[in-house]
Each structure stands twice: as structure tokens, then as C-alpha cells.
Image 1: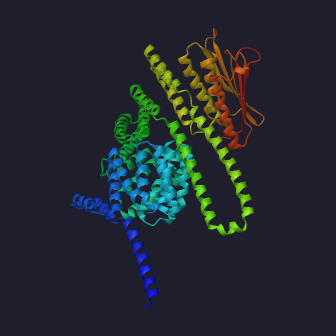
Image 2: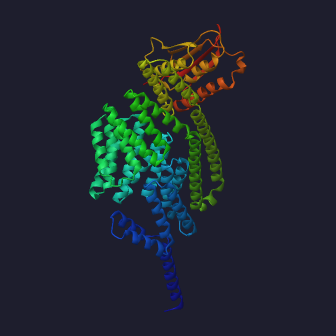
Image 3: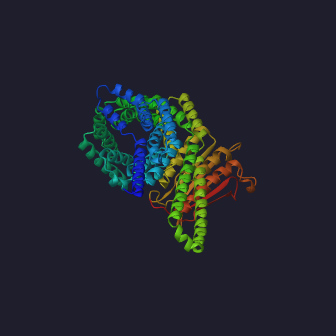
Length: 614
């Protein structure tokens, strides 16, 4: 054989061997065999696992073993140990000369661990890294999974519109996923995101879609006879029955799911099932049983240690106590809810998460531009002048778009920070407690407690419910001002009404649009005055606009040039930001004005809003 041919054959075998060696050192098929042995409860498993850990020279296998141990610790809520083993895996993975696909499993487990412990900023960071790798390698299952992990993070941060967007982007990937377990998992997660968004919008189409995905998941689960997948499907079907007010059917699915729970240490799922059963029993007015399951749900949620779900468990206790007129039980739930939510610091987390998503999108755009530049280098040489012009124009448009998005983002963040003064809740609660001690009128106590609960719920829901009917806004203002009268007895009178020609059920307006000015009148306009204050609020239709007018007889402004003081400025800035966003979304010309009353003391506020049919 000629020398040249021998050399070529040697190089061919050398590169082939190098390729196979690289493949081998970047994989660990044995870990899947070990996991299967664990699932089947094979005898001698502990001995097999110990031997695998001590005798395996493959660093990838060691890293995968650490990741698997971390998953086991997450299931038993031992989060510190889970983080320790994930840190050990990361040290090994960073030392390997493998492509970035080797990091996918690590990012997935870390994202779910951070999500479980309420560290949503870190969870999103891990999910976005996972998505970038999956997209670059055309990995359908991993891409769908990462989008759903990102989606559930946004759901937890009360940004369900963004969460459903990521979920919908994962739907076209289902047809590309072959393994039945992977396809069933993606179907289950998509169904959860659709149902979550249904809870925000009450759109029956979303509920039907969620049920469709769950039926597909259940079909696969029964084909492969997987108990875990069947159990999860039953949990989903329970939610759909509850949404359709089939409470007995919902309880049947819950009981079926609990019977399939062989692992009693899966606190998260058990807590959810107990809380769901308590909710159904409450709707059936079986309050004694409802309290028992609600307390059990809280107990297991506290073992999970996720502050968001603990707050939800307390909210359920409050609701059951309020409906059953057990006000001591209701107060327990309310105090627990306020204590948890006050410690979450959601606003800063929301800001950081939005910044992370923006950085990810920017990095993705820059990567795409770079790849296109490499592919078309020859054409760039032929048309350099023309392309440079296009690049300059594109860069200018992109900069303007980013500035616009940044302005919208900053405005939305200001709106999140501009919720109703949290001291109002604590002061109102203290006033209710004092009111309860002063008299024995149970009906009055119940009415005021119900009024307070409605105000609290409307205030919390206003972060994601953009519009309400005029009737709902009038009801809210009446309850809010009545509760303020308890705080400031004999201080002011109020009157909230709509023009007789205005159908208050036919039109919608942004929720809590006038409340900041009403709060400003009570908290500051009536301070230190020697006469009884008055607040009058009127809704009426003027041409193609809805007008909201507020008039008070307080101190007014000594000098309108001073209306930028911190109290008035806060109310004005809230409305200015909301009108800015409203005009962007609906392309309208909403506006407002504030001035001293021309015929006496006090302030006159006018808000002009577009016609929004209910």
C-alpha cells in the first residue's frame, strides 16, 4: 500500500477514535440504568448505587450521580443537601471539554429547585440558559421544557400573560417529541399553564384547551401504565371540575389522586390536594371538614417552605372562616397571609426578572446577527456600502424600540410600586379589632370584616386585572370609603354615584382609577380642618368618553404651583402612568386634570377615559 494511502487511513482512524472517545467522555448511559433500578425497587439497589459512585472513573457519570442525588433530596424537601450536590456537579461539569449540552440537566434541576424555594430570579436565569442551549441544538423536548419552566416563573410573579406566551410557544414542539414519558410531561405542564391563565381571565376556551391537553396526557399515561402520570392527570381534572362548579366530581378526582400517592413525602402535591379538597368542601358548605383539610394543607405547605404557596394556604383559611362566620379562624388566616406577603419583597424580584428577560432577548438578537454575518461574509464584500446603510438604519430603529420598551417597563414598575398604601390594611385591621371590642353587634362586625376582605382582594387582584365595570368600581369605592370612615369617625361624608343616563354594567374602566385621589382627600385634604369633610364622586358619559369627577371640600392647594408635593404628586403620578399605558395599548387620548375648586375650598379632579364595552 502506498505511503500516502497509509497516512490517510491512519488519520481517518485517529479522528474517528478521537470522536468516539469524546462522545464517550461526555455521556453516561449507566445513570439511566441506575435510575430504572431505583424506580423498579430492585433488590440490592443501595449496593449498586454505592459501587457506581466509588468505582466509576467517568467524570460525567459522577456529575450525573450528584444531580440525581439532588433530585432525590428535593423530593424530600432537603434543599440544603440538594444545593450541595448540585454545586459538586457544577465543579465537575466546568472541568470537562464537552459542548454546552452537558449543562442542560444541571440548569433544569437548579431552575426547579430555585422555583420551589421561591427564588424566582435565579429560577428564571437557569431557565433562560437552558432555553438558549436547547434552541441552538434543535432539542425539542428540552426547549419546550425550558419555556414552560420560564412560564411558571412568570405565573408565580403575577405576570400570567407573559407566562402563557411562553407556554404557547412550546405547543408546536409537541409533535417533535417521540418518547411517551417526555411528551406526557410536556402536555401536563402546558395544561397547567393554560389553566392558570384561565383563572386570571375566566375564558372558557382556555379551560377547554387545558382539559384537551390533560386528556392527551392521560391517554399516554394509561398506555405506558405510569402511576405518576395518571395521578397528575387526576389532579388536573380535579381543577377543571372545580372551575365548572362540579365540586363533588372534583373531590372524587382528588381522592383518586391521593390513593395513587405511594410516596407520602411528596409534600407539595399532598398539600395541594388537601387544600383543593378543603376548597370544594367549603363550596359545599361542609365547613368542619373544610377546616380540617385546610389546616392539613397549611401544615404540608410549611414543610415545602415556599412562601407563595404558604400565603395561598392562609388565604384559604381566611375564606373558610369568613364564609362559616368563624371570625377567630378567619383572623388567623388573615394575619398569617399579611405576615407572609409582607416579607416576600416581590417588587424588587419582579424588576430583576424583567431585566433578565430583556438581557436574554438582547443576547439572542446579537447572537442571531453574528451568525448571519458569518454565513454571508462573501455577500458582505460585494455589497458593503448598501448593507452598512441597512445596518445603521436597523440599529437606529432597534435603539428607539428598546428605549420605548424601557419606558413602558419603567412605567409598569412604578405602577407595581404604587399599590394602595400598605399601612391602610394594618390601620383598618386595627380599627376593626377596636370596633369588635367596643360592641357586641355580630352582624356589624361580620359586615365590616367582609368589606375589608373585599377591598383587600380587589387591591391584590388589581395588579393583573386591568379593567372592571363601572358598577364594580362604584361598589369598591363605597366599601373603601366606608372603611375609611371607621378609621376616621365623624370626619367626613361621601357620595359615589353614576349619572342616570349611564349604564354602569355596559362600560369598563381601569380598576382603582380614582382611589389614589380619594385617599389623598381623606389622608391629607381633611387633616386639621375644623369642619366635616365631603367627598363626591360622579361617573358620567360625555360624547365618546367616560368622565370620572371627584370633588372635596378639604384644604385644597394654597398655591397650585405646589401641587408637586409628595402626597399629591404620588396620586398624580399613579394616574399619569396608568393613562400613559392605556393610551399606548388602546391608541386613545385619555387624560386628567386637577385644580382647586373655583367656588370654594377643596379640589376638583376630572379623568377622561375612552369607551370600553363590557
